[in-house]
Image 1 (cartoon, helix red, strand yellow):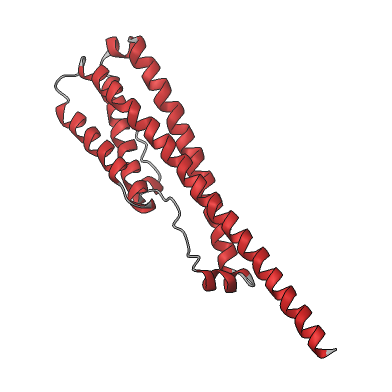
Image 2 (image 1 turned 180 degrees about the horizontal axis):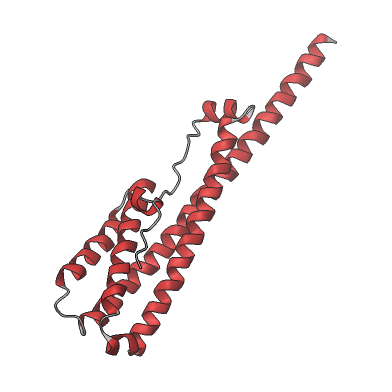
Length: 182
């Protein structure tokens, strides 16, 4: 009788282990998928930027430093190796693009150019998708991190090498409230 109870207990524990392990695999894959969605949107933005820069260059030839900064920021996003590097590079690129649009405000002919208007619209749409993808990624990472840190999943996670994932965070400067002067 004791042997039968022990065998049933071992079977139940093995079954529980498999269920927990499979759940952790699903969550890790969701995190990887969420990250891939961010990369898709970053690539879309990456592809739009040269067209936007070329359109603006025709009107704002003396803004060489701005164009160089955008090119550097664009390259940094594509060469980033992890979540933190990608977040930092992406945030820098976003700030340089804001500068580009600020420069464009000084050129009424450019603001009326249909190609520029469409590129600006496409880029804004992509920025919104990036923001949504970041939020989705962070939600997915949070759920995954909670899973690997709570009992009983933390036992399986530590045995099977599951590690905490980094959140996609903004730069400190972007966390501060902007100063508004009238």
